[in-house]
Length: 364
Image (cartoon, rainbow, N blue to C red; front, side):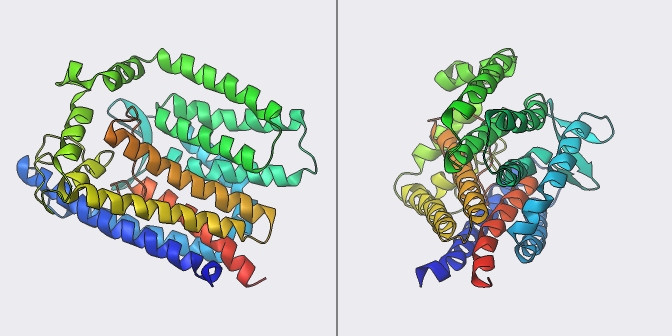
């Protein structure tokens, strides 16, 4: 009975997260518009997020009824198209540079972030290639890693270090799930990790993030402002919070609160009880996703559902870790909760893919 209801529970928990997230996006953005006297509607961000939500529902239904097996077969084409998009973000007139980063492509009034979708597509592409071979040799494995390194390098130089970390850790989890011999993947992981670490340490903003992470009070007027104000917001919520809409930090004290640090405003307004509810929702999503994975009818369904469940859960862990001050800032959205169209669409596709593994089984 529980197995049959797992997709329903997963969808319910995700919908609840999105509903609370929409409320918090409107709460934080409307306050920012009023406080800074911006020449936009207080409902602008709300309508935008709802638009992405509707588009996510459409894409999710499309993916769900196509089924994960068809999507896996399409993963090579999706991989190469997204790799091309990662190149195009550096082309003037096509790519958009925001805060010094080349992460977005303009699509009319909307923007598109290829790295968010690559988080989903890259594991699918690996599963597709892995299932094509009877026995994975070290040469075959390294050839796959070489292919995956190209988009990883492009994401690294955007720069989007958070996305690189998420993809690499997700791939490591996938290697473990697929029972790839550790002597195969440990060396490339150490190599790529070392290469990425060396490259990252050459970037001034990475050095600065590490320094600010260790002691944000040393730069309260600069990079340390957000993590420091996030701590104030989170701590001032107490047990029950200040009350919905009563946050003080959202009044331009905590900039860009609607995205990376929206959980801090949530904690300030709803307190420890509210945060506990939020964490329980993510734990419930993880449990439902892994339950579906363990009930999959074949290896492909198991690999896909388990990996994508890990991906969504790991992103939530990173974001909440940053907000609480346990982890350095990585620019990671809180899945289904933060403002961010590409993140919302990619995570919606991931969840519907997980659910589709159960649908295939029911109709087999």
